[in-house]
Length: 44
Image (cartoon, rainbow, N blue to C red; front, side, top):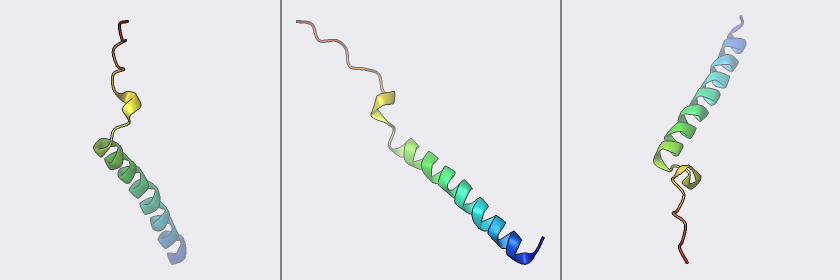
């Protein structure tokens, strides 16, 4: 592999893995409300 190919491979890997890590951290800090338990039904 040429030097340019190795550099582009590293850039692509950092982009993919960095995005995965950033998404995981973001979801851990701010969980989606839809994943929480639903509100209990209101009795009329």
